Length: 139
Image (tube, rainbow, N blue to C red):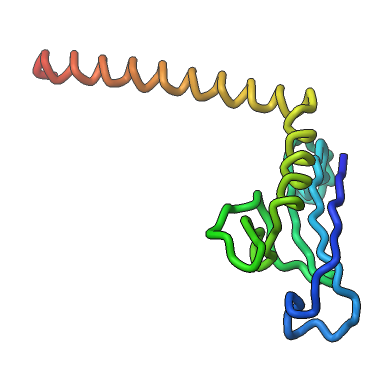
């Protein structure tokens, strides 16, 4: 699954190193469910569930990750790396992220993470109680 959000930038927003007249900003949000890894000479397909968010300007990557809110300046309310994002475009990006997070695969990943966190907490609670018993008993 992949969503691409595009918009055009003004001349003042272009990075200095971009010599092209193309002033297109693009945010690509993708959900990867499988990747191939190299395992000691064997190529092995592995099931994963990863969201990747990449921001580009004129085809050059300028940042990655979820948008971070910033103090409003020059019409930007958020950023991904060096790409400033307006409120309208931030809404479009957040909508695409929500679509990814609403997939069955993503919800299952979150469910597994919560179950693992709960098991971790139970183990740590048991370990603390046993540690207290051992210390109180003089062992």
